[in-house]
Image (cartoon, rainbow, N blue to C red):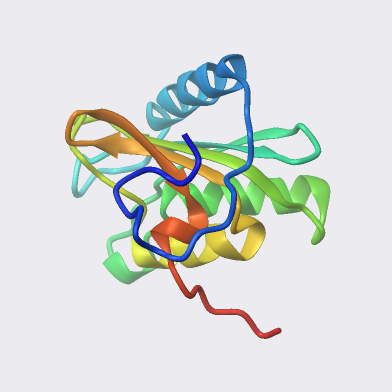
Length: 148
């Protein structure tokens, strides 16, 4: 429910509404994407699916590198795919992130900022302690950085 979640005391914006069918589809697509991850070092596979306000669904998976700092997170890979397909005005409606270990794993700080940039109101679904948790990007990153 909008306004609830693990960071409910944070400054809030209404969360984008998505249907139950869209939620299920995004989680299924994210689960499929994690199987394509390139994670030879950590063995921690992550998959992400994003839904844009225009209705497009794009996926990403983590891509590790022997130089660890060059690793790409699944969330940023999916968002880059969406921008490549829809252009710079693309806006996120929802993001779903799952991992192969089934352990709690919210988006990292860098991914939170990128999600915020493309959809502060986007619904973000991720593996929590007791299953999938949902919140808005602005709740995950209160006071996100902007240039405006």
